[in-house]
Image (cartoon, rainbow, N blue to C red):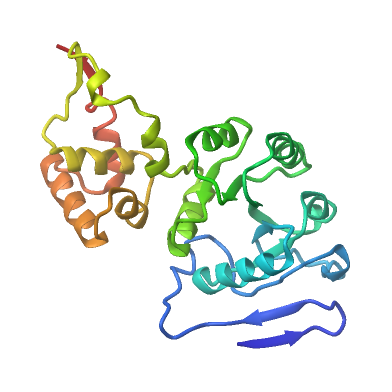
Length: 267
């Protein structure tokens, strides 16, 4: 690891790469390499007239966790990460930083009023960005509450870092991420489902149907594998077989061709 301090700005540019960890595609999140870990407004370089590169914004009040998360995201993604101790400190300088999305960290059980306030402030800012909640809690009610309050993603801290980065990539691309493993608990038991309706899987097996549903939501192979408890190579095989059945050339065609195919039907 190399820490190079800019004497004029007080910003630390941190370069850290481990040979055993392969960064994601450098364009996967759409950022340039480099890192700025910013704890206060005084540390931000606003002297230059050149626009700053797009970054991930991390908001975490705990200094130790903030620094660890900032470095970890840099390590796994290879892209810029700016961190702040509060929503207010980020908004104070947000006009000077070209960012792509905000990761809002919530420690312990979320305070609904505080979370609603923070999400509202971020949404009403001069340049609102997609916001992702990173939380220790993964109760379905909390996830739904966060999404209803304006969050575009909800990542529990129980997921691997690489999956978290993939989820961020999905949100940046315009999607919405919520952990399927948590939300599935909200589904009614099959004992209570009447026999008057069923889902027509068409030409697909149950597992292929689950993969198709994930593809239609824009999820990457890594996320699909994580949520369905499969190997990524197995997901690729399923996608290949699905494309073969549909005579589709790519994932986009699969999503389009199955749009009206997998819907509940009455018996």
